[in-house]
Image (cartoon, rainbow, N blue to C red; front, top):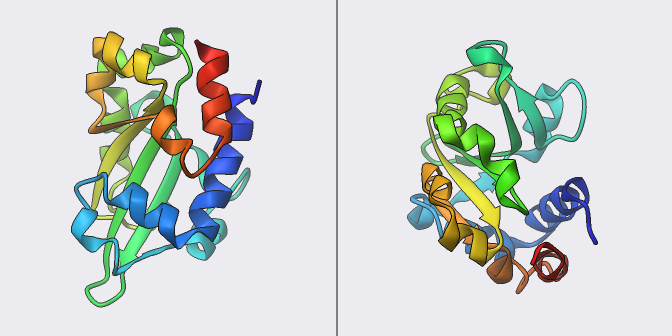
Length: 167
């Protein structure tokens, strides 16, 4: 079974290397109309990140040290609009405690317009989880978007394996 951090790394690599996957992901968010113009700010995130992977496990010093599992900041070069996707990956219900207080959105808001997080101006929170969990647990509604592992598996086959292991 693929562990969560392994899936995080695979997801980040696919997002970076595949224009098709980036456009697919963005098309499922409120930023859908921007996907042809948006550039993933990988190098900029790498420079801003002092430890760990360029995309992950970022914490804020305010709001009780809340963390986001994966952060992807995009920019529309023509307008300089920066927006972020805060992604959380959950395999089972026990991993949803933080969402009970709506803290994912709170954390995303706390990071907005901060230089350390590339001054993004808008965001969405996205949950990646097995379809059964998305349908069966009301706490998943605390995310702006919910994307089943089963649909991600069309681009990243390991998500199909994770879905079967979580079932």
